[in-house]
Amino acid sequence: MKIKNSSKLIGRSESTTVEWKQSLSEINEIIETTAAFANTEGGSIFVGISSEGNVLGLQIGKGTVEKMVNQIAQSTDPKIHPKVTIKRIGNKDIILIEIKESCDHLLLAFGRPYKRVGRSTVRMSKDEYERLILNKYKERIRFDDQICKGATFKDINRDLLKEFILKGRFERGLDLSEKMSVQEILMRLNLLKDHKPTNASILLFSSPQRFYPQCEIKCVRFKGLNVTEDMIDLKSITGSVIHQLQDVEKFIFNHIALSAWIEPGKLERQEKWEYPSKAIREALANALAHRDYWSTAKIQVRIFNDRIEFWNPGKLPKGWTTETLLKKHESQPPNPLIAKQFFWIKYVEEVGSGTNKIVQWCRDWGLPDPIFEYTGTSVVVTIKKAQANAKKNELPRIETTQKTTQKTTQKIIEEIKRNPQITRKELAVIIGLTEDGVKYHLNILQKKGLLHRIGPDKGGHWGLKSSLGTSLKV
Picture (cartoon, rainbow, N blue to C red):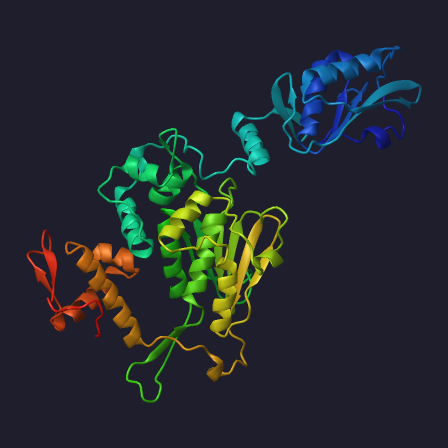
């Protein structure tokens, strides 16, 4: 029987936060719904109300409420102690059970997890419950040192390992041989756990999207100044995190301007990107080493007419603010194994100076200070263009093409001395050029008689002019 104004108490219908039960004979369903409310938004259970919303009332004895409360507590884990009151509607008594939302949504009823979906109480899937557990403990469970479920050593790309070792040896003196077994290399890099590949090893030396689809970078070039403008270009960058960084750099440099001019007394033209390349690489490397890989969100790079934004899913270390990033601070990467390998190939430093360097590089480039923001779910780094009224003579000095060529050819000579059988592809990886770029510099050396090829392209080796010293002028 409907009672006038009863809807003010029990609601007009069942919902995500309201449940009606006819009697205490439905105690099991009451307990499951109690856990479901705690695992969702909280809610109220009205006992003594029919499924149509009619007030049926209950016969409530001296121990009725106490018995029900004990049953709820004994059947839930952790124990739920809801607020229970007796309400009178007309001349009938009902029981109101009020449940607060739990902090972690991990409560069980009869050993099983439940949640509220609309007007229904449903059992959580195993995967959903496991994700909630991981979310609760991810501050203490690092992603990078966990075993990658389903991965084997066959998933490790040996060519990627070789590229990494060659570059690490060149940049930081990494003492590893590319001829070692995959297992030994990963073991020495501390990328194994219980003799199995870790998530870090898959991120660095495999195609991680097979295991973690969120491990990609979304790059967008917008036409104007905000995200409501048309997109000129959109690309999702996949592959290993090392190759992701390189491919995102290519995307960025395809969409920003390169200034060129001739200075009096100089034959070579002067060139300068509108954003410092070092700051771009540091922002990308930080995003890949510091992101929350438990999150299904993706790193984003947004290019606008006046700025570049780097969106990194994750949180600041406990007690930190964005102001901390601008001061001297220790390095606290959530993925230290990834950060360590980036250190070997000189993509990051270990001393916590990355954000400070981004600021300094922008200043040296004549740009405004970068902006660091925390949205609650992402850390955002924004690098802005130079102000319109910046004076040309305030722009920082940059290296001429001639000096850059000298440094590059010197690096090539050093690598050939170390390994005469080295290939163009290996040189490209170590020095950070394209293969065409390496070919260009090798041709310069050959034309000057400083370098020659002995034997066929495959199986041959490089020969250097015998009188060639350690320094080289081109």
